[in-house]
Image 1 (tube, rainbow, N blue to C red):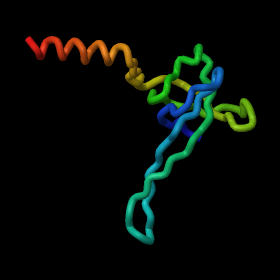
Image 2: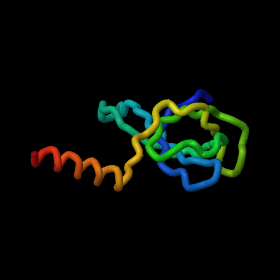
Image 3: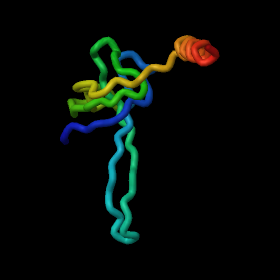
Amino acid sequence: MKPVIGTVVSNKMQKSVVVAVDRLFHNKLYNRYVKRTSKFMAHDEKDSSCNIGDRVKLDPSRPLSKNKHWVVAEIIKKARIYSPQAAAAAIAASASTWML
């Protein structure tokens, strides 16, 4: 199998993540392209550094458990992490400059 690229959808486990991989294929009957999503469990050894929304590259590996057959090779793009406190501070700062 070849490496795949997907988006992390869950990181609640220790050293494991769930990655959603999209694929596009052509439906010959309706002559349309169809998008399908597969979810793969992957091993994340590096201090569980993957967060939800990260784009990652998965490499195939030997079976690590019943459902886990992939390893996170690299994090391609980190997701922006939402912080309610930082968002409230930014809104307050923009509101104070707008009033002046």
